[in-house]
Length: 238
Image (cartoon, rainbow, N blue to C red; front, side):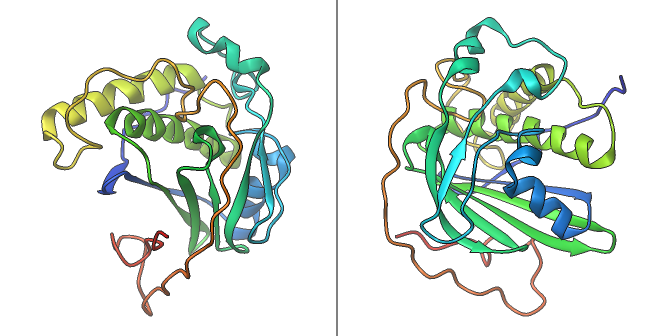
């Protein structure tokens, strides 16, 4: 299997907010299917239905053992038999954007996927907002980067990299990044103890029903603005 260099590239762009960008093989419609279709999404994240309209139901059934050939570490094995988690779509604009509440924390946080075509590739911008505390931000950032690595391999026709070894390297890298930056440029300062009671995306071991809330209008992007801008594409929170 090919060895992959995969660095911790996530940024804390606001309190409780992590953003990760990845340039992936296109076209956008193909990548959109990997985000929203259950059978394709299960290859890199989790299976489950997704209703593509505001208020629509989102199901995520995590089975990490199916993502790569690596066995699941003992501390995460209880997640391999956990039921599907349920949340809801907040905003959907196919094949450009989808936002949904994150079921792992009972809908307290939310994740947005934005797609920007760049020639034959697509820039995926993932933003996870309303995360509570540095430990959760580290766990979530490491988990998303490991999952996105699997997605990149699937889209490129490669054998998927080892999920758990990649996740462990990313956790260590984010911890070092925090230590070096003192919170200025890392995920957040003030922690070196990584989450152990949650799965790689910060999910709790018990399911909590998502909390419904009204959706605030999302400000439009200025003409010509790209994903590198750190504030214009952030959705305003209720």
